[in-house]
Length: 404
Image (cartoon, rainbow, N blue to C red; front, side, top):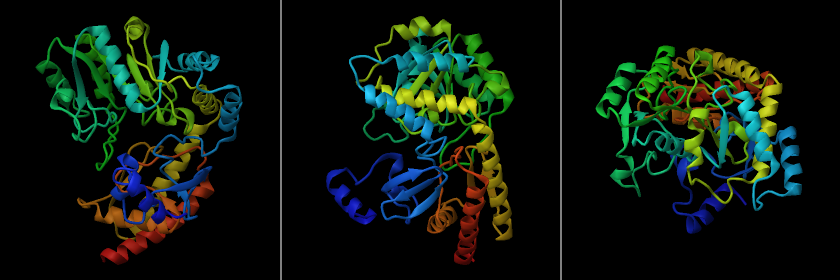
């Protein structure tokens, strides 16, 4: 069984052979589609090739693949039951943990993925306000439901009719967007930093974060932080907590359970009654194994220096890549938090340089991405990053030789 054979078989039984953001046809030519296993900060594809993993399964793996504490908690719960006639006690324990940890959380509701959580958060906001419009940054990714999917295929214009866009980090633009639908804004939904694919990332300006909070208060709308991608890698209390900005609602997923499928919405007491009115559910939303994994993951993040470890490893990677790029004559932009990094090549509008470089990195055992941000995990040690930098240096050299 190899990658080529599996692609050929999949093409007969899966539309396009693969779909969505994991479709390797969208990446550089050498990217594998199918993987065999993961351990720590490494993954192995079905052809047996080993990679130091800087995508962490596109974010969910925050402690490292197969983390013992998480796997033990999941196995203990699996021995008791997973999908039962109702949730297990673990649901209450996990909700209590989130409420204790997150200053803006008075309650929690659970689902399965980030799209569930962002959609559910907007439902709560609309139920609470009786309004329809949502202010959203232009180009922001909030999931794959019809209201937010980046592709219009299979959707209708009406499904996006209640969105009003603004420019990220522009308080003037946000205020103008609110003014166009004055009196009908249910929510402002915003990511903790600008992490749109194909573009350099942009950290939030504190004045913008505080201004968004003030605007929501002034117009009676809910401030919703989409912490699906950034949550648990910047600040366990919430990614805008360092700025003193607390949302009304927060959407969580990805790193919440170190790879087990779960998402959550947390909210304030003022929105508890509205949340109770929702009919929002799923047969697998209350599966206990993922909740046990989430509790173990969050407790491990809380009890260790996991975020600090990711910051150290991310800083080491960033400095190493900068030095290598300069030595090989490339001008690069490294953007975003060091725990959620990305590198782009200056002037590389068609991504040809990034595609070639990331493909070369793969050949030297380093898995990162040409147009989507990367992710650090607590399993990335100084030695792992140093080993990865050996591969990226060779990739820079090969890319320079190719482009001259």
